[in-house]
Structures are given as structure tokens and as C-alpha cells.
Amino acid sequence: MSRVISEEKYYTMIDVCRAAGISRSTLSRWLKKGSLQHNLPRDKRGWRLFREADLLQIKKEANEVK
Image 1 (spheres, rainbow, N blue to C red):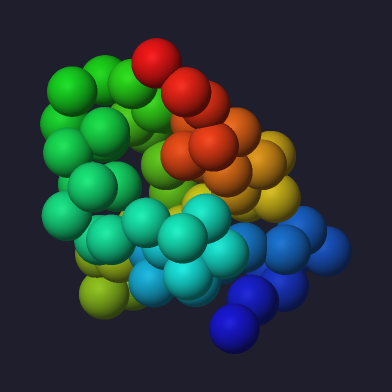
Image 2: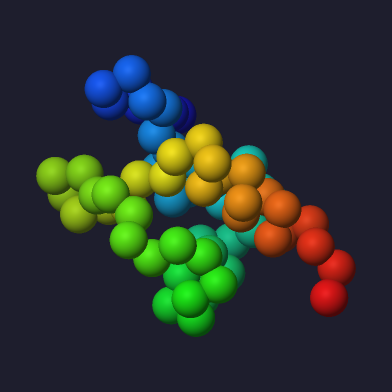
């Protein structure tokens, strides 16, 4: 479920994982490894929020064959 904050759409980690077809542990590993942007905004609970551009980047990374 996306959230709109200041007219920009944000997604939670689980939303991004579902959309990209990856697990939370995979996304966490990519963030720790530095494969993805690490300075993501967080909500009041400290949960990361991903923008539409972040979601597209993660989908691209998930579908890339290495």
C-alpha cells in the first residue's frame, strides 16, 4: 500500500519486495551492501520509505541477470 506525502508517492519495504518479487532479506542485503541508495527517508517508526524511482531501480536490479 503506497502513501502520499507532500504529493509524492512512497512505498514500504514489504510493498517494494512484493512488487519486485524479492524477499525482505534480499532487499536488506542490497541496502547493506550499498547496491542501492542508503539514505532513504523514514517514517515516524523508523521504517524506510521508497519513492517510485527507488521502486523502479529495485525492480530493474531484481530482473537483471548477472
